[in-house]
Image 1: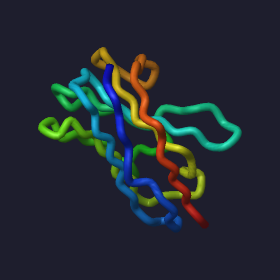
Image 2: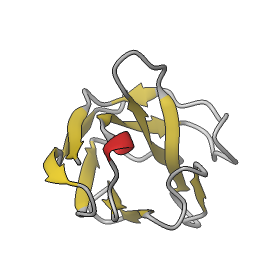
Image 3: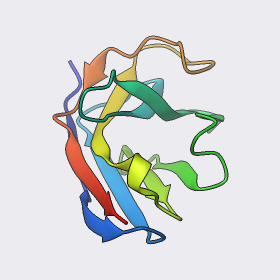
Length: 120
C-alpha cells in the first residue's frame, strides 16, 4: 500500500502560478494528477513514469502545467502557470503499479486531494 500526501493548494488570481507537491510513502511505477471540479467528473491532468520520466498531459493544460518528480524524495510536483478560473478544482495525486502510457492508464492509490481556487 502506498500512501500519498498532497500539499500546495490555495486561492490565487487568474494568471498566477501555483505548485502542488505529492509525497509517496513508497516507490511506484508512475504518478499523476487528476482534478475534479464541482458538479463534474474527475479528469486526468498529467502523469509521469517514474524510471524514465515520460510525461503525459491533458490538452487543457499543455503548455501551462508541468509535472516532474524527485526520485530521492519519492515526490511528484505539478507546476501550474497561467492559471485560469476553469482550473478551479480539487486536485488529487495518484500512483500506479504500472508504467502508464496515457490518460486512460489505471491508477491504484490516491491522495486526499488539495483545493485549488482561481479567481477571475
